[in-house]
Image 1: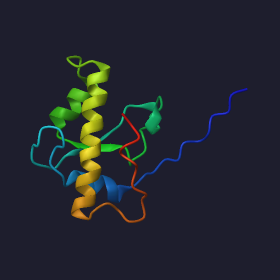
Image 2: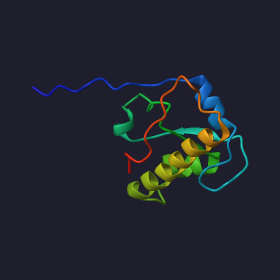
Image 3: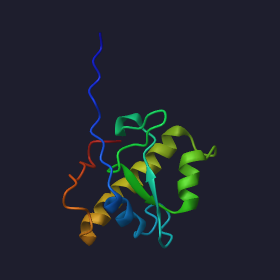
Image 4: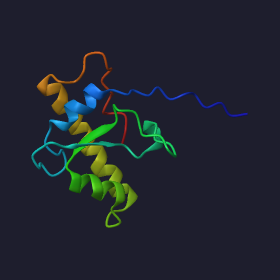
Amino acid sequence: MTVISKFAYVRSRELLDAIKTLPCQCCGAAGPSDPAHSNQSVHGKGKSIKASDVFVAALCRTCHRLIDQGSRLSREERVAIWTAAWRSTVRELLRRGIWPTQIPVPDTRVFN
C-alpha cells in the first residue's frame, strides 16, 4: 500500500493581492498582474484543486493565457517560463517587503 502524504496548502488573499501589484514577471507589462498558479502536481495542483498560493507567478493576462492554454509551447517550455516568472515574483515581493510575514517563503532553488 502506498501512502501519500497530505499536501500543505497555503491560501492567502494577502499574498494574492500583493502579487497583483507587480508587473508581469514574464514580459514586463505593467500591472495589475494575474496571480498565475502552478499547473504542476508537485506544487499541489490536482484535478479540481489549484496549487498552493505560494506557487503563484505574477503574469499579465496574455502571458497567463499563453502558459495555461497555449498550444504554441511545449509542456516543458510552459513549465520553464512559469518557473522563471515564479522565482522572479518571489524575489520581487521580498525585495519590496510585501511578502506576508505569516507565510513561509518557498525555497525557489528546489523546483525546476
